[in-house]
Each structure stands twice: as structure tokens, then as C-alpha cells.
Length: 264
Ligand SMILES: C[S@@+](CC[C@H](N)C(=O)[O-])C[C@H]1O[C@@H](n2cnc3c(N)ncnc32)[C@H](O)[C@@H]1O
Image (cartoon, rainbow, N blue to C red):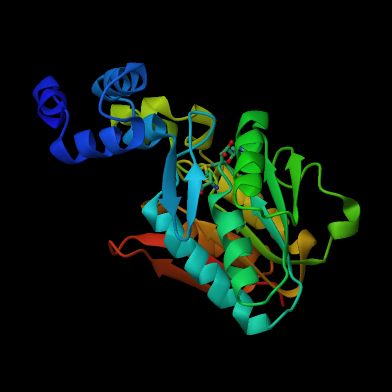
């Protein structure tokens, strides 16, 4: 069977994954093979993919979580450990599958910290997938908000959030045209942002950073993923918003990737 899939054009490793998932014959396997050969990302075809400790359901409703975003979660947990809070409120802006927020919630639970997560996205489809993943992993301390960035949050949360995490769209429209066509399978609204302040793809990052001090508790952290050419812009925006202890980390590939900043 593997030989047939490989002869049809699949890599051997992928052919093996598909047969492990869908069996060695039948419509489900044929359908999966057709989708993969048409260029659909393997993660969508399989319908689930690991992210840190969680096996997340993934489909075309939301972005496929990336390995560098796993690093963001590490920085966020390290940051939160500094405040030693036993019941922090965590806000995941642009939650998509829930990769960031749900893995933080799961890992804090393992450490005996009972966090509450607010998962927000402007896409009702992404939010539904996030809810599905929360139920899948029995993570119940989650509320879901549909809105644009901080819009739709309850006013009572202002100044009470210990950790804001976000991986907003940060690809500029021009850059988008040069990227791998495999990204065509992912929601456009999860990837591309307008330019702002003379920086390509910066509009959503600027909004997320500028809004953070209103919602963060004193001493609370903002942890945000960004693109390679956006380090100076995110640092400037964070200082301009009055955030302090600003550090920007490279990812494991050596590219500028994660901003960590703190409300004084
Ligand atoms: C790059 S994806 C990140 C998804 C997920 N957090 C992750 O890291 O895999 C960006 C997410 O932001 C959401 N988004 C885009 N514009 C938004 C806005 N104005 N307000 C809230 N969410 C938005 C998209 O729907 C998408 O789910």
C-alpha cells in the first residue's frame, strides 16, 4: 500500500502517516491522498497536529500552529513564573486553534496553577475550533470572545490580566505575494496585516501592543510574536505604550521573533 501512495507522488514518511491515520485502504485514505497531492498541508489532511503537549484539532478554520510559536509559549510561562501568581487571568488575542492559550493553561495546571483563559478571535470559525480543542483536552477554565483585538472584553477585566499573549497577523501584503502557495490553504485574515507606521504588516501588532496597558494588571506581561523585520517597531511601540522590561528574543532559527514587555 505504501508503495502505491509513494508511486502516486507522496513522500514515504507522509504515506506512512496517512495509512496510520486512515487505514490501508478505503475512501478516507483515497480522499486524504487526493487532498495531499493537491497541495493541501499535511496537518489539515490529518486533521490534528501536536503543539507542545497538546494534540490539537487543526483544519481550514484556523492557522496551523507553527514551531516558533511553541517558543513563545515557553517565554510566556517563564514570564508568568516571575510574578508567582496562583490564579492568573490569561488573555490569548487571535487564539486561532487555541494553541498558545490552551497550552499555557494545560502547562500551568500541571504546575498546580489554576489559571483562567480568555480566548479571543474575530473569526467565529477559529473560535469554534478553539472551543473544540478546549473540550478535547478537558480545559474548562476558558471563556470565548468574538471581537477585534480588545473589543468585546468585559470592562471589569481592565487592569486585571496577568498575561496577554498574541500571535497576530504580521505578514505585509507585498510579502504575502512572495510566500509559499501552500499558505493559500490558510485563512487570509490569519496571516496578512496592513502596513502601519511605515512598517510592512505592522497594523495588528501596533494595535495589540498599544492596547495592552489598559488590560494588564500592574506587573503583568505582554508576550507577542512578530516578523523578522519588525523588532525595532515592536520595541518602539512597547516603550511608547509605557511598557517596561522590554526584551525581544530570537527564535531557534536565529530570527527576531518574540517580544516580552511588562506593565510597571
Ligand atoms: C497568526 S494567526 C495565530 C493563531 C494562533 N494564535 C496561533 O498562534 O497559531 C492570527 C489570528 O488572529 C486572528 N485575527 C486577525 N485579525 C484579528 C482581529 N482584528 N481581532 C482579533 N483576532 C484577529 C485570526 O483570525 C487568527 O486566528
